[in-house]
Length: 256
Image (tube, rainbow, N blue to C red):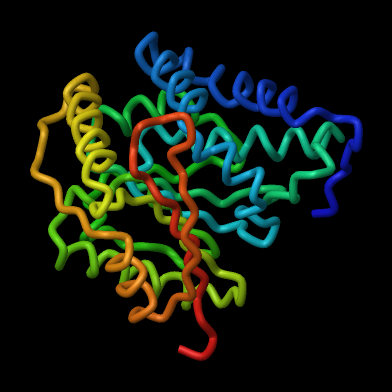
């Protein structure tokens, strides 16, 4: 898609519009779904960070969101598409997919139910699967998003998920295939401990059982992804929070 860019558009104004548009559908899912969506999109720096840094390209049409929760990323993708078509997209932001073919995978049935009630009407319709990321079938894809999820499974299972992600991206055949993986850097002890405490608290609030978690230092995450055939860039992604979150931008290495 060749998006119509508006050089006069303020990125702050555009982000506020996206926030509103992407969260309004969650009113259909109930008060909790709506308030959670507004808080998550408004306070978590990763979503705007993906836009500001141009990490979601127009070529990333087939999207798999592992640990999708209420499917907020699907709603955001749809809202971005509408803004571009209407010519209100800031010139400093790269174009994102015109029509995203979205598959969300989520273990918790309550979250999947809220997603279906809230964004099931989007076009093209998002595919929402209540499944375990360790065994769910991953479709051929251009972009995989995993935000703050892999620490819920042990180190061996983490690698298993990443192997299957790599294979799904390879099958997709896109030379610009990408994994966006946010993890906690366990070498930052204080920030990692805070993020784990908040994660457990939010898990309880969402009505889910708190499970053990497994972390790695950033150097180990990088080494693992490189061994699996990715070229990796790491970006701090906890601005405005006390956490030790890092976004790993992992592109398939053609030479691997």
